[in-house]
Length: 100
Picture 1 (cartoon, rainbow, N blue to C red):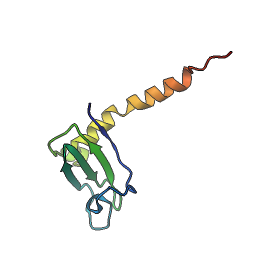
Picture 2: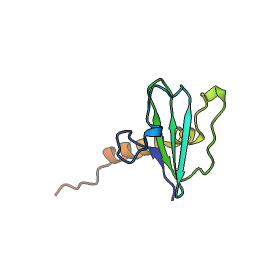
Picture 3: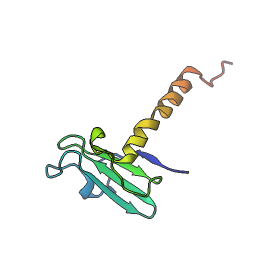
Picture 4: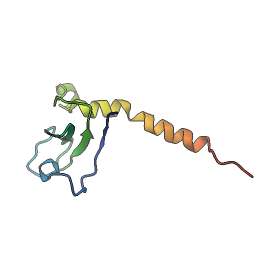
């Protein structure tokens, strides 16, 4: 089983090196790895950062200039995140409650 998802910046366990600050350049990525779990931090805009936690990707790769040098794990997340939205929509539409 693999994990690929976003991480909140206000968590206590998040290292300060990956948090947004004024010294990180736009489209800069930082990768951390420990015990088979990787963390990626990408800066899409000034003073903003996207944090990803994952177990799937072992190699830290970024895309080409046409996608603003995003890490591959962010591109994978964006390609597959629609499944959760579809399941939430089906759960709301087809309720399992029975009237008695």
